[in-house]
Length: 383
Image 1 (cartoon, helix red, strand yellow):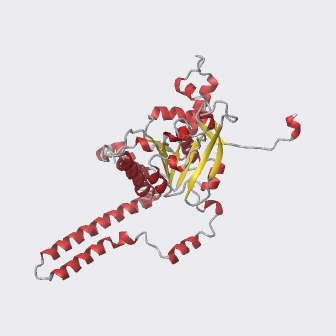
Image 2: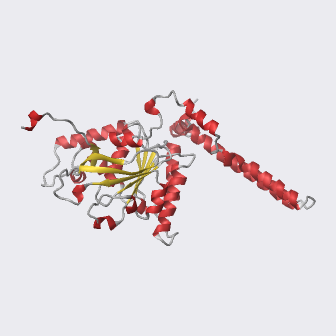
């Protein structure tokens, strides 16, 4: 009809496509409606309670009873939504009995076969703490997990609180290509020679692979985030794109802006908030991988493999975490280590399964963790 410009032109039409709700986010939309309904019930109850308080013809005790009844009706749906009978619980389990075994109880895979076999992946509502001394590779491990999760079909939200996006990009490309991290960053070899055409080709191929992935890694490098803002960012990402897992690197870089006087109180608050208000939030229900530092005390021990008491302000971190993983590389302390590329992931706490140690291969040049494989070799090859 020649009236396109009158309604806003092409930009408006394209905006209709972008803003159209989809069934992918049906649960999130339902939660928004649920919250709005709960607030309306509370406002209606508040009006009713005010009217009861102003009614001097009604006996005080009767007014109190009516007020309590009005309040309970307003909140009863919220207070009981997480309460289930044993019959309901076992019925839910029964309905899953015929599901494919590989899909039952498994979370976002780490990409490391032995670790996934023990943990079952990173499971919804679980808080997994990844701890280690500086230089052990916590950021490299977290980045490897993030990339493996995206390849497995998950959307990952990554918060590298002490590293800007540009440096994270270098790390990701180094891990993806296997090229030296310094080469990726400066585009020049340590000997001063330029990056070769073949190496540039590897990087361009990696960029194209990322562009073609159906899932994505969302990186937010805002420094000094407080837990409330962190949750707000996660919710916004979840509503817009859908988030399957959160990685926070690391706990010590979060801030409460001076709300607490002692470090212990601050850590206690932040760990509780992450577990109860992010991992277990009914609208999110996300697995969270939280990196943190260890106390320096272990440096004085002969055996420097971490134990649970090495966690900084360990009481709250250990108590709230569903899983505690320690990263240990003997080569950090011993230049003559027999296996310089060996990395140990020590599962020190596992709320729903076994503890133990998983061996990984660590490529220091690109900060990459991969499965450590072993095979039997015939005696004829040892001559």
